[in-house]
Length: 136
Image 1 (spheres, rainbow, N blue to C red):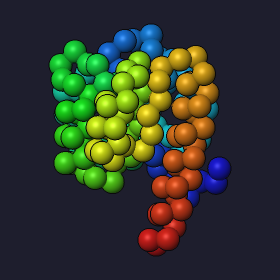
Image 2: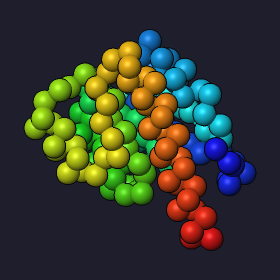
Image 3: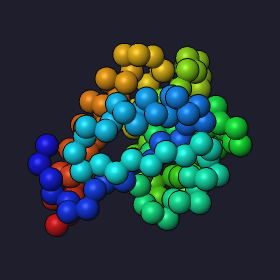
Image 4: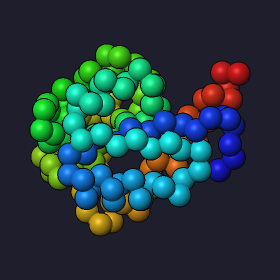
């Protein structure tokens, strides 16, 4: 992937399980031009939303708020932030509600999802970079 932007793209991960948060971070660590920050809950991430991440990875079950509420807060702040949900929830109704909120992708937690997540984020960065080029 070619770097178009001098400073790294910011990606926030909200995951209350430290081990899973670390695994998500490791899965994405090799992607160039990406700065990853991990948060244990929605409130701590919302306090840093002014740092303007381009991508946010959200778990649906958090200790302080629902993932859906967090997504609504993020979208209200900046509708251009791309959201990828990584959760163990398999309910079609839940996934439909999330899609209605404009999420970019939904992944069910599994070993295979870490490799797929890496590919999703790389593809999403290509889309973001292309949009940036077109707007310049």
